[in-house]
Length: 354
Image (cartoon, rainbow, N blue to C red):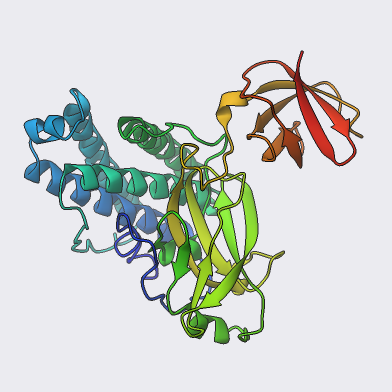
């Protein structure tokens, strides 16, 4: 089925370009049975991933790699969780009279403890995005509740492993939902630049020529941020030289024939998976470190206290009231958690302490 290659080819560690990209696929017609089997495929993969690694590496190996106790024991607990998810989903499918999908055999690209934990972080992040993206398609409220219960556990596992790697455990105010088609052909990306190898052959199939502007759309939390990709390598690859301000944590990048409409029918290739870190000068940030209540003044239609998360100077600020999100360029003198005031100045916003 369309999702069976999920994560296997996607998540090589440390590459700076994507592998050859597959044919684009049309969005499938989904029902609860397909979604449950989609989740089961994810859980089979995660269970087998941890089972193999924990049988290969000992507690002493993990400690020697710099992950102090109880990290190994906690990974064993994660493995138990994935086993429980597999059993639950199989029983749910059988109870509904639906045949569970067949389990596949996987080869994971880790060579030592460090690359295993790196890959675990990526897999957990993609799992969170997959469950989150599936929620809107579920019809049965009992399944919806179950998916929410699993999603919460996957998110905590992701945060824990990120913290063990020295990464921000919750780098974005929002997790990133991804749909079925997006996740069915994820591919690896490095930090910067990002190259989509052999992508022009896919682009031609949606009417793109060598003179067409193609966009790399960075998907981070609820943000989708397009930047122009340039054609390289004798017009066979597309390369992105800069990662935009405003992305953080595990970020997905797709090539799109549109810089406005990011629907799947405009997607050329992707997503690529990358880690956007505040500590890397190449990356923009969307810091939770200055999240808090804001009092907005001088901004039409905004008043009172709103939730906000802002980046560093020149970054992106998201102001959220109960019904909308407004993005604006901001000036921030320093990270700030707590009460701050937003003052409108022309088309920019200035953040000042209360």
